[in-house]
Length: 222
Image 1 (cartoon, rainbow, N blue to C red):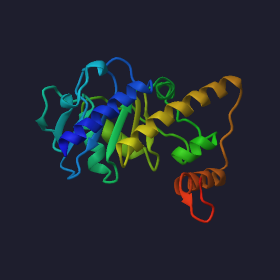
Image 2: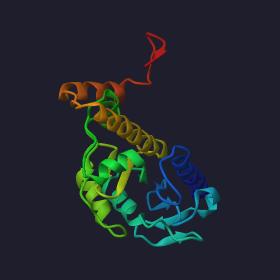
Image 3: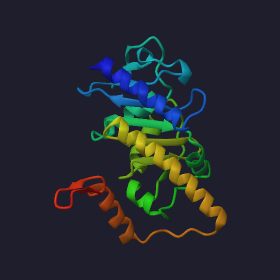
């Protein structure tokens, strides 16, 4: 199972690069093992072009390295803190994607001014406070400030996203950068207006419970 998870985590990290969410050796993705006693995470400082499944590092929830030729990501403690505090999370992504991180740089949430933001995030993408890298502080701030969103901006740092699976955490990372870019461009054109709360709720409910499902009576996918 861990061999398969190493392959999936390696592929997930490479997907960050393919989607333009990371540069050089920055960013990382991890996933929780099925028995929930360890995680597999990207190694520290290894170029994406050289990355192989066997390079992924297995880390116990205590933080002890179980398997790996490389050291684990410098954000490992942050990932572990999120897993310990959120039993619904199976994967964590961290990026410094350009537009979303620009909002983080100025300490601003991404406002819910588009139906796509309501769909994916259920409201504004929150911005947490500044926390120092390397210890428990980032994970604690993510847990304190993320609410029900699958994404959070960390002030003067970058983006963290969470999901029950690798695909869901990746989806949130791709979408938060996409909407951040659109909102930034919109702000250059003029003032943006938040969607009314009832419209946010209606769009999020539709997207969460009906989008992509097949209705037998209609025979179509929504």
